[in-house]
Length: 96
Length: 467
Image (cartoon, rainbow over all chains, first blue to last red):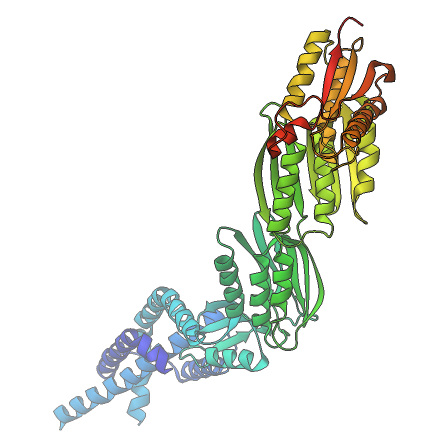
């Protein structure tokens, strides 16, 4: 993991920033989000992929691409969470 | 918290550019990542002794194949690859280098090259052996056919290096180590090389033994070539020591009347016993030939050439082998020179005079036995007598003035008779020759000096005219 982080820090940072931006927008965006059922399905899928990555079942390059995808996705989610939280604090302060 | 769930349901649009990023990252980073991991894995193995290392990286998975020289070495090599940061899985295809039983190593030399074959214990030792072979045999091509194997006996490298030294002393041949047993075969380069190799083998490392030393010495060769055109006798090859050298050179000087002796002999050890006793009579036989080659190789004497007449050829073929020491072989290839054109009486007399002016028929002191050194001269006289078959010849014996007159008279008669006997035995008609003894009555020089006396002791061939 450390090796991947040092080797791909640029891409991971890009994912994080993308997440921050998306999280920032998401708080004030109108319109329909993903339904709860779909979220569950997606969470299940993500869990399955993480499990596959941790158990090293997928060999060779595909295994590497999966690792890379998951770690970028994790950074993205962290960025989204951070972005939404920040935006929420900004919005709340305005309201107050 | 509920708000957090509400926001998160709207995060999905960002996954589309994220997927694009992911694709680009995967596309651009895979090859550099694999190269980086391969380099790190190879660097981790730098201090491990392995053979046939193959490293294939797919993503972060490494397929690692190698031959290790011990189980610990194999395990530690796999562990060091596994410990390389970033490597996810190692597909372990390592194995141990096969064990050779028996552990056989060999070095074979032929004219142009040395081939190292069999098993070698470690790459470092293999390289040392190759370098030693190249350094020790300057200019000879060294071919490496060695495999790496386990199971070498202790101190194998020292034994192999010592044997590589010996290969330089061989013209062709093979040295082998089979476990701790050493075998050698082939032909030594020089006389004495066999002995030098045997001496070196005493320094084999502890535990090694010589199973077979079949190195042969090169044949001990002595050659003499009588060249009738250049009028030379060329001696080449070896003689045992300076005394024998002097004896051979002196015998050549006595037995060859006209030929200049070109002496290219070298002294060397390794001569067969009885060398001088075989070579000196063989030189006498060569002297009787008009042209010929004498080759003495170990205990085999080959004499080839042309005798002056048939009886001489028969005598040489049958007689020479009898003079040889025990165990010597004689292989004559004697033909007879075509007879020379006949000449008339006066030419015949001139030819006799020419021959006897260059050399004299000599006898044992005070006796009528012809000295073996004079046989070559007698053969030439016989050949000349054959060229004038109608001419009668007086064989005149003379002595110096030492001793009693009656004894000298008798001696000169007996010596003349001995020469006539020789001529008759050679196939000439007995009736053509008259032995006459003159004692000391017809001196050519004064009898007061040794030189004068030597001139007076002689056999003359006198053509009788008008008979």
